[in-house]
Image (cartoon, rainbow, N blue to C red):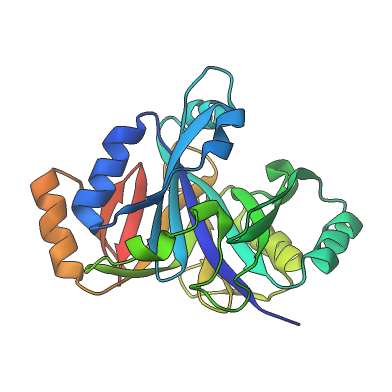
Length: 263
């Protein structure tokens, strides 16, 4: 079996400009691309690159979008998608069909520089959050072609504070059941920690599943970052008036209604 890696986390925000400025000011990230393709969904976006992993923020431009409904359901800004990539998309498409999991989208887009494909799984069939399984022309090379981030994203992948995204956590109504389902979907084992959090290990990151912590319901609630300079991020967050806190796994800053845990 080939690789299976976390490549992108997507957040949804009511006001894109506010959130992208906070991300730039606090994490020291530069926008590497704005994808005009999301316009057909009534959205606009910004992407940020970190060593071949990506953070995307989408925001509704019109009423009646899936992103807008998600904002309403989760009572504000928050995590939206957990996106992995692989080298065996055809086999995985058959695997999802055999499990009876519906696809929201089956996408392919590209140009002379790169191509990307994506299977968005129906969240009612997966739980946790919207899960996407992709394949990109860069193949095993994390710094290779990734069409969703544009033709020159590598030139903006130069934060002095952040190295990469190394995981995300979903708060769930039934974390054991959701972790077991994702384990079958991704064909990776799920293990329970002493703290009651379930974890699936990917090649470069983790998907974690925990109990509900607030009244916002099920969804992606935390992102873990490997940092080059966590202290600088905390100083930047204080200057920007961004919430800072501490969890058992380390300090965090809150951006777009999501905890970014610094490691």
